[in-house]
View 1 (cartoon, rainbow, N blue to C red):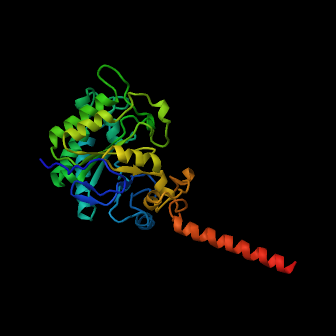
View 2 (cartoon, helix red, strand yellow):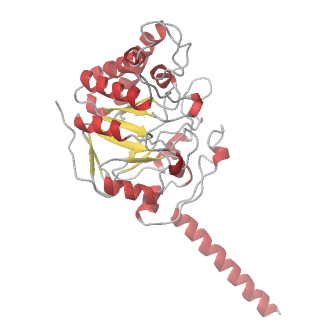
View 3 (tube, rainbow, N blue to C red):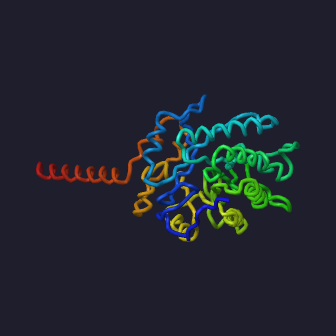
Amino acid sequence: MIVIQRQDSAGLFEPFRLGDISLKHRVVMAPMTRLRAGKDDGVPSEWAEEYYSSRATDGGLILSEANLTIKRWQSLALPRSSIKECTEGSKNAIGAGFDGVEIHAANGYLLDQFIQSVSNLRTDSYGGSIDNRIRFPIGILKSVTSVIPPPKVGLRISPFGTYQGMREPIGEASGPIKTFSRLHKKLYEEILDFGYIHALEPRSTGDDDQPDDKLGLKNSVGPLRQIVLKHGSQFNVAGGYTPASAKVHGEKYNELIAFGRSFTSNPDLVERIKKDLPLTKYDRLTFYTQDKAGYLGWPTYQKQDIASSAAEAKIDVEASVVKIAA
């Protein structure tokens, strides 16, 4: 069994080891659906290189958008064909130079729909019991880790998310913790040296946040964290973090923390957090549009400061001219 190297809890800007990847800090760019790929073919747009390169940092980690498979999932052929497609796609990604693959099972997308009883109404071997409902994602993970070293593979989940009508009802044999605990335990039974879990915190509902005082004590990823750490794997988080709350979390837990919305409008987010610089507010209206407005063109803090200084200098000069003319 390959156990990921553990360190004591440390700040956001301490080195971190994720499988066989050495990172120099713990601020991660989360995967975001920005809808800038080709509508018909899913090919990334010509803007993607600038978008990602402007947000890259020395020793940092970026999780790119997911690649969607859209079919009629009621068909028994879907799990089988999707497992094959996902495995081939993951293998190609590593061959193209990516450092790893994160399987998306969150926010009401395909795998999340299979996992949760609110959406999985199947009566065959992929529906009904928790073990049946997790069969498809476990099948994908087993297949992907058969062609890629398991430490290079992660799984993204949103146990408490309500986006797209999700969230397990709480009962004797159900509920977010019961369902996702079984998923985690089965995962580590089948794949001993699996890379990591990327969990969305309860405050994140998919496209918005809910205040901490509305969450309740039962809404905690803590039990899932304990399962992951027990198996020597890595637990990482995302969901509505601010620079301040991320720093507090980083002092308490040995985890990576992923940011989404703040990265859209702050390409230099890592530096801003490190130096306690103010953030530029994101523009929700351009999250999912089809052009480069709101996707590219966000200045770094340094460029904002230079522009601000230049504007102030211009005002001073104009005031002097007016004063002399008078």
